[in-house]
Image 1 (tube, rainbow, N blue to C red):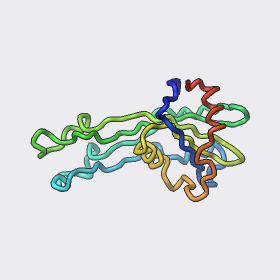
Image 2: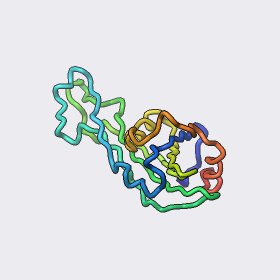
Image 3: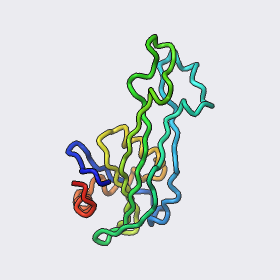
Image 4: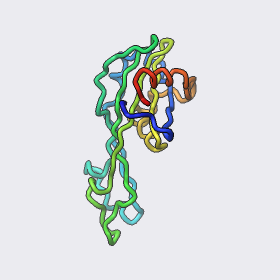
Length: 168
């Protein structure tokens, strides 16, 4: 998280379910998530669901669970590695899928878990809507309280993180 927060980035904050009442419960967050790739209709019969290359992998690459405190708020920073499909997925004739390394890319998404008033929240820093959706899938949407989401954005708290963690 040492890179400067870019002007086109935004932060979205979600409250985790009530069962996450402290950062110590983060071990209940899945370590990875697999998503089957999307292919054109004429290729669907060639997708072998038993082949790992047919999935996009979302995982945590940096979750040392180091607990930090800023202005009385406990937090930890994890990094989500998100694989995504590239626009070019097929060979020149459009009859075969390219190898996975040629048809996928990845980006790393800083993710801040923090405690406030006996609840745990997650702040996702990204420029991409699809990355936001992917990180939510990695956390597991069932772990996110989308109904009672009190902190859709908490600009003041993020300004504290930004100042203390030197995002700029």
